[in-house]
Length: 259
Ligand code: NAP
Image (cartoon, rainbow, N blue to C red; front, side, top):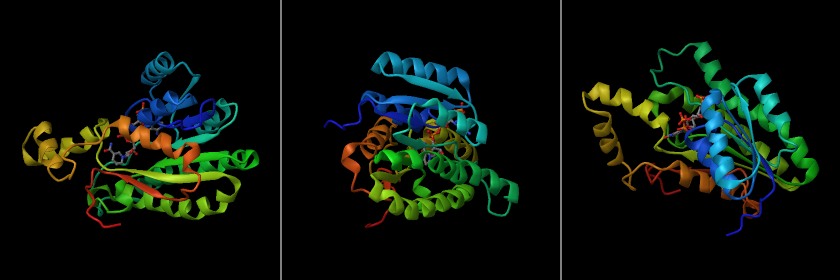
């Protein structure tokens, strides 16, 4: 299927590794030019070089923390125009409801709610003026079914989901499509960082912890950044125009719900 987005410009945040990188690679594979971001300049440069040599499009790197105003501005200004925005940032650490302070909540909300909102506010006017735009926010399956130890994530991402639900319906008539992509467990560094404490707590290896977790997923495996990226590219395509404000879950069936 031709996704019809060759030659467009996309910003993909937090894209040197993991799911962001999967989205950047899938878009580059469709002929989309990219601005990619992450804090670590070295890994970002390596990813940019790989994407350029694999797909041949333009890839501009903006290294820095996407939760800061300065880096958000730099990312938006780096693209000649922003047709596609994929928001992403690291997830908050696990913990216990009784331990989180106001500052912990503010940090989580900055990364996983206020940053994507600020980026949308920066790029939506241009998309509306040109009559075409696509936004995909990488959130989490935790907005559908809470993950108790990730309470900071549950809280911040649910706020973003509320913002998107209303805003997507306000901009749809202008040709701008906003949706959220909800990962369940995927094989990335983030998955390792969550499996590590479980392994430690149970006195087993990280591989054993992974096998236990895979057994709870109907697909019996973790998702891959490549298949996550392919879904993201579809949501950014010409074909997603009637899909407004949806929360698309990619979790191998882990959340047991009829709808
Ligand atoms: P990952 O493999 O750890 O990769 C995170 C990427 O984001 C890296 O490129 C990292 O590079 C970059 N990054 C992190 N914080 C950043 C910041 N403040 N500014 C700019 N770049 C930043 O994580 P992932 O698995 O792809 O997860 C992506 C998102 O999906 C996270 O929010 C995560 O919580 C969520 N999620 C993941 C899963 C899963 O199973 N993987 C499940 C549910 C939700 P630098 O460190 O160099 O900045």
